[in-house]
Image (cartoon, rainbow, N blue to C red; front, side):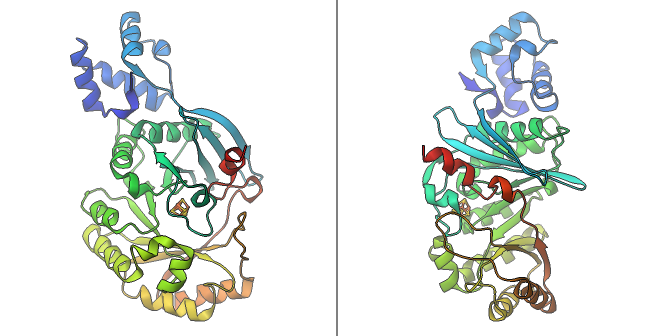
Amino acid sequence: MRDIKELSIKELETAFTALGQERFHARQVFSWIYKKGVMDFSAMSNLSADLRRALAKEFFIHSLFLTEKLNSADGTQKLLLKLKDVNFIEGVIIPAENRVTGCVSTQAGCKYACGFCVSGRLGFKRNLTTGEIIEEVLFLKNNSADTKLTHLVFMGTGEPLDNYDNLLKAIRIINSSDGLNIGARRITISTCGIIPGIERLAQEGIQFELSVSLHAADDKTRSLLMPVNKIYPLKELLAACRGYAAKTNRQVTFEYILIKGVNSDLQNAKRLGKLLLGLNCKVNLIVYNPAADFKAEPPGKPEILMFKDSLFKSGINVTLRKSRGLDIAAACGQLKLKYEKI
Ligand code: SF4
């Protein structure tokens, strides 16, 4: 049996033809799954009983199970989803004034072992399939208060650009008007700095938002926080980002976690300003959210404001992002850790 969510509408039309059915049923099935959130062929009432039975023999729709759902006082919701092979992934719903953002995982576990990230400590299990990525997004959509999901960030567990083909296929279905119809400019792909993936993404001709986890302005500190820097060091990474911005005419967002005594003083702020000079970019500053086992502290408010002000004076577009869902362990991997330890 195949996961029907692996198929684009064109591929599903072809599959219907192969089954001796009319192509237009593909559009009906897409509408049930992506517009109405129906995950059971038997409930697709405008299809004949025979067709529903034939579909159920050939395909499945549903393969993820909701294991736990946590609600934060600030409205953030975290979903722990169990995969068929008993691996776990996490997805987060983040409501704000005029948007609802889904934070999506692309892999079970992660091999990059960033020092501040719980997911990295659990090791890599496997890539998610296109169908699993889409189903995760459907779970987030169907569990958000008014089933609205306006934005997506592929920033959950795993490195999205390491699962490039499955991710891109999922995004094309999510982005399509027959699918979830979420605009490309509302979809952010976040990477720890996988240069070949950034270069490939620049050639796609779709206007995604690209977000790069930077977290340091020199190789020594970045390699300490993010071992991936030893493979893709800053100079090459920044060159790839400049190439991406030039090719797509889009701004690149850099994520920078402020950690006391590591990367948050004035010297680091000036170094970062210099590094990003002339690059069409924005910097998101995030105050460190303490995670199990990583002994570090967030800087005090004066240092945070001084860092932000220094970037601003260097001509960098900078915002200070608020941490959400702290009371429900919304930082990457923290809920999953609870289950993986059992
Ligand atoms: S921050 Fe992202 S890339 Fe780094 S270990 Fe965590 S999940 Fe992997």
